[in-house]
Image (tube, rainbow, N blue to C red; front, side, top):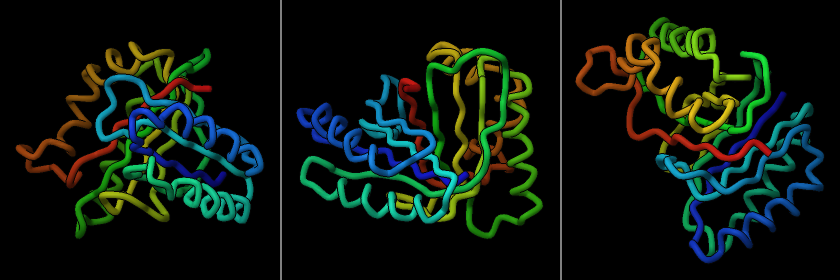
Length: 203
């Protein structure tokens, strides 16, 4: 599968109108999966509107990215971050995820491939232990836009916002294995610059 994500910062009074326009604009894209939703309180550098499209055809994704970015070239859009990437979602716990979350991050240039793989392996531990995750995907970025040359997208579907903010972020597996890669006071830190932590209703 081939995905594109855009985290869009919008002038406040234009958010609802732009979200509606983006939903209409996404209909002709023939995407396998579409999310165009306002972000929920608590995002960090996550934009005001989250757009996520998934395709089973690379050409269809390329065409959609060009059209989507054209829609975002307007005064109401202050800025956006995003990425294109490939991969298949992996099932997690049973049930239905009502919240979609995406984390965009950048691994420090010069990090060895062995270290990057160790980092990725630690991220993959989270869905094994956090039962509020119903599906997930960890992908390396093919093309990045925005404030940083993003290297990875880590996305999940959660039971609800509490399942994200509580069992996930506060789980011992998170602070014992994952946080060290992000903590500037830890010698293992490899995630550079800010991250984009964004989530919305899973439409």
